[in-house]
Length: 240
Figure 1 (cartoon, rainbow, N blue to C red):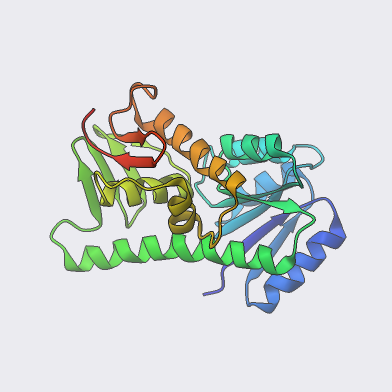
Figure 2 (figure 1 turned 60 degrees about the vertical axis):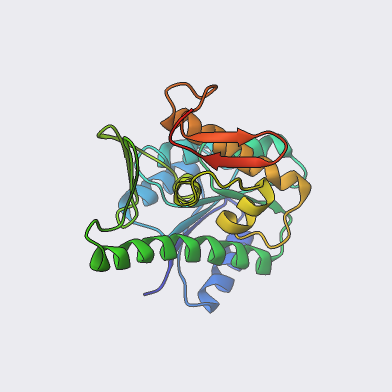
């Protein structure tokens, strides 16, 4: 089945080029040219990934990202101005999974989108296979915390917590390896698919860890689940 991509940018020549390139790889591409149209399309149709420009008419990319996160965990990749670290961090804070800087190489865009969709699909397929083979299908538990890998749902003490695609993947990796410390570089490789992370990219992990803690921890500054090994990385433990 063709992957469904929503490309959102008010520069029609850029959208045309991205659309043509993605369709060459048999992807189904829809396009939106302002923020309000993007939100409406994301509500009306399920996409495998959204490529979202930061600067848009009517609603900017951050507002679009925030609104989409109210009803969907679809992976979102932001397009940001080159070198504008604040925009990148804000995008991640508002729920984006990754970012690509303008001007970009279309081959990089395609590689990044495919890597994210491949990992998201593989997590879902792993959960589905587990459902057929195990007595407790597609389910990972740590005390009151329960991850259902087939439906990609998280509950804590019976209360459902909405996670983005990357937040879910990050928590699943840590939860499946309790006590193992992952460096930020290794998390970028394992969860985001970065082959050779740049030093500045590690902020992506820090922002996602902070957002994850805000959602799952009673006291994010004194976490119960996701811990920091200072100078090394992050690890999961069900106890403080």
